[in-house]
Image 1 (cartoon, rainbow, N blue to C red):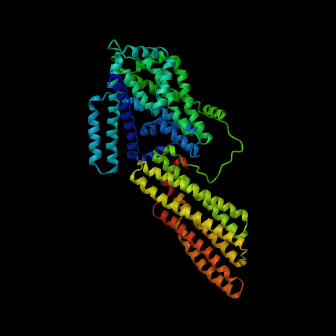
Image 2: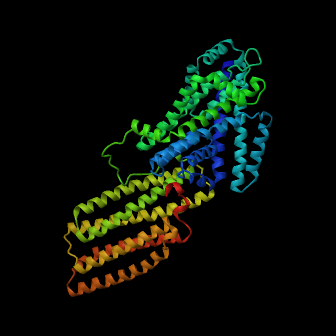
Image 3: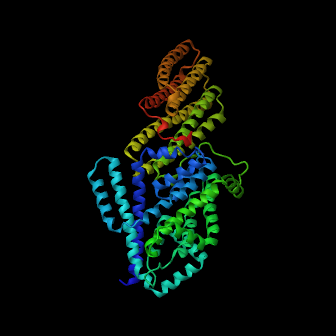
Length: 563
């Protein structure tokens, strides 16, 4: 194998180890953080300053500004967060992402295998989930540095190549070329943290004189600016097909980094001098990694301070570029919250799926009201609308289940999250059953219309009254699940007893009417079918109330950003 092939495989292999380590560390940090992630997400709606802090903290856990930005886009698209809040989160994410570069700047080459061994030992021996995840985080941390070390070793021969050093000289002398190189690198790798790690490693290689950096800080800064521009592509891709506010959030991320690159490209040398002044002194190849990390931090902190004061202007600017559409119709039964881009961030994903199930249950509640109206008035339009809603709900139910399946298969859930999510699926099953039974009731109305059944006035009044009781029972159960402090699930159980008594009385009175000739005997079967559906609805409402009684409610999944 010749030297060129060795360098290519060494770089790509080292980069693969680095990215794998970073992703594993992100996943294990999330699991170790557990419920604390919800607390961090709860900061999102407080104010713009807390939004910046939350964005930085979330990015520190996720180890990716792109992941935080995608999460913000998902939240703003779902209506759980306003556009100004989402933009302030992105400002914070840009600060949080600099932590990776700061960690990389530490020289821990001699301790890489210690981290890998200790992390493996903890994760292998310990059975407790949280401790195991801490061990895997340490293991992933070691892998991250192993990838960096691998890339650094294969880069050393490049420093003695005249062809390569001439190319680097051109990049160092022409800042705009450096920006283009950095942007292209991040577009390919899809991780600014990874490309900045490569930059830090490469800049740490000695030039032909054996003393100074092959690239130098003035050559590294334009590439760093390009890395920041390149990372915006992930957010732009995540906004495709999302709401207009989601697209505006992605655009704000792009404008933040573009404006920063445009501002700093004119002051590369003074900026480099300032970074050199505030960074540790020593031989250039020894300190340049820290200098690049500091430049990354100062750049993002400076741009955040500038834009946080101009947040209102940023909001107006992105709304001007992406204006509102007039007469934009919203289908109430389409998924409003699900976003597959945040599957690997369970705290956020569970919040979205919980909101989607609440949305689903509200549509079913409206269906129940229409069923009552349909039974009373026997209008064909109402029946058709109920059937269309039922078909749309079936599609939505499938999408929610697929989303939950993906969430489970991602392996990102903690044991507590998995247990609560299983309860969530139980709730979804009973709400779906309520929708299906409503559709069956619509079929009964259609049968009544087609066959010109003539129920007595007393029978229709009884059905209307018992359906209204079902509505109350269902609403009480939902309140117990979504606002536990304000509702009493026992009330739903008591209503079931009333409905059971009413059901028995209705069957008795129907037979009396048949005996007296007030109702036709051939209506008994369709009438009993309606009562059977009503009885099953009551059972589903009881199931929902019992879930609420057994210490399960939606507040576990929702943070303040959803309230």
